[in-house]
Picture 1 (cartoon, rainbow, N blue to C red):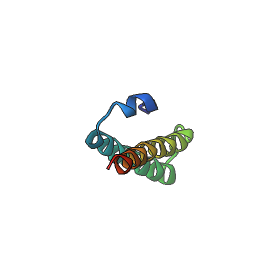
Picture 2: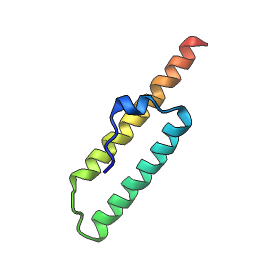
Picture 3: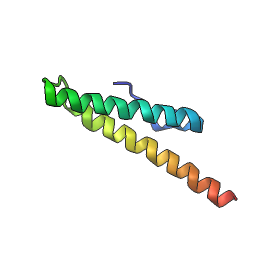
Picture 4: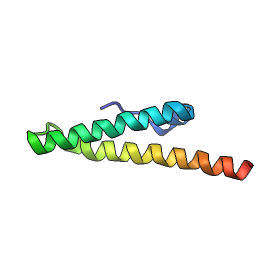
Length: 71
């Protein structure tokens, strides 16, 4: 799994962050499918991917709040 820290995510612009979110959601889908159809090597990877998605959603929401406050 690609480990990206929150600090590194904050450096991305909105478009890159959305792209990273889509890629991570696709990865989660593949992991879930793999866990159902065959044996998954690292089941903890599903939880780590879900946390990564939550971290990205949090950053997106923080930016929305900042924009609303500055407007």
